[in-house]
Image (cartoon, helix red, strand yellow):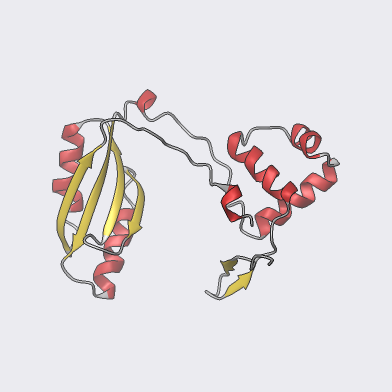
Length: 175
């Protein structure tokens, strides 16, 4: 039975079905996830496509929301950002203005790499990177806990990154 196409949100908050990916699209995405600096000529060669054919596929993947942006992954430790931690945040209230203010303030914190709204015991999980314990203490006590509505912050310091990846499992979406 064919898999139902995924959906993507449009600018007016509606959802539209996405065209299913074929094997060549999946391979293209895998290659770009491994190395986004791979040349278009090399991509076209590995995919057995012409240059215009490759450009057409890339544009389709970008236009349909499969490719959000192209980035460079920087080694945080080389920059002196040695402390990686996760902060679990509980809000005292869940009124829209309180939640909105929390989300807005977190957006402006460069130390917060990710912020996830959760179900369960905590409301938000923040992935935070800082140079040292003193910076972490200031960030928590002078910034995050001072955001109106924040009730509890529990922080876990990462001892060792066992796995860190930005590549999505493209085979998991196949049937």
